[in-house]
Length: 368
Image (cartoon, rainbow, N blue to C red; front, side):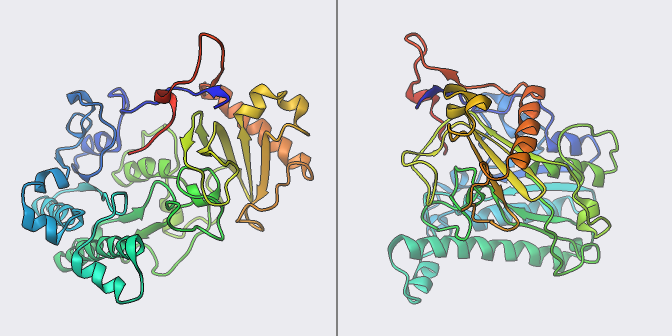
C-alpha cells in the first residue's frame, strides 16, 4: 500500500433511510431473507430496526437440522420457501420481499445430486460444486416464480434479479476485464432482469447504463410516493419501454481502499483494487487511480504518471485500449466531471503515509 486507506465502514448507520423504511411508510409489509451484511452486532443496525417487519437469516436457523443441511446445504430452498410463506401471508396487501441468497458466495455448497449431475457432465472438483451451487440457486428461483404464477400474484408483482458484483477469479469474465473486487467491467457489470407480465414486454433488452442505486427511487415511485429526492433514477420508464434515451448523465463508483488478491487481466499483481474513482459517461469510462494522482503529480504529470485510464466501452468492452493519451479531450471532460463529483460529495481521500500515520491490516478493504 502506498497510501493509508479510508477506514472501512462495516454497518449501515441507522440515520440512513432504507428502501424498507420508505416502503413501510407507504403501507407495505417488508421482509428480508438471507444476507444483510450491514450490522455491527447492535440492535440499531439489524434489519428489524431499519424498516423490515421480518428477518429470516437462513442457514443459522437450519444449523441444527442435519437432514436439511444435506438436502439444502446452502439454504437456497429454505430462503425461497420462507419468502413464499411471507408472500402468501401478505398477498392481500402490498409487500416488499428482499431475497438475498448466500449462493453462490463462498463457501460453495450444493445438493449431492446436483453435484453428481455436473460430475457426469465432466466437471471435477470445485468446478462441479460451483456449477451445482448455481444450479440449485436457479432451481429455487424457479420455485418462487412458479408460486407467483399459480397464486395469481405475478400480474401485480415486479420481480428484479440482479447482483452486487461480478464473478470470482474462479470464473473468467471474458470478454470483460477483471473480476469481483475490481472496477473493470468484469467486476461491476451485473445481470439485471426485470419480470412483470403484461407490464414489461417479454424478451426486450435495454442497454442504458443503470446502477443498483436506482432500485430505491424505482420502488418508491411504484408505491406512489413522489417525494423522493435522493440518489438514483426511477427505472420504470425504461422498463415499460416509454423512454429510450439515457436516463442520467453519468454513473460514479468510489473506492478509497485496497482489496487483496489480483484479478484476471487486472492492473495489479498484488491487489484486486487500489484506491480508485470511476466515472461512466455515455460510451466512455474513466478510472482515476488515487495513488498515482496524489503522489505522482496529479493533473500536472498526467501524461506520465499512469493515474488515468480511459476506455470506449461501446467499441472496447474488454477495456484493452487505454485512450487517456490519445483522446485527451474526452479524458479531460470525464476527469473534470469526476473531480467535481468527488468535491460535491465530500469523498474522503486516502492519505499519505507518515511516521505516525501508517496503514495497518485493519485498513485493508475486505469482504465476507
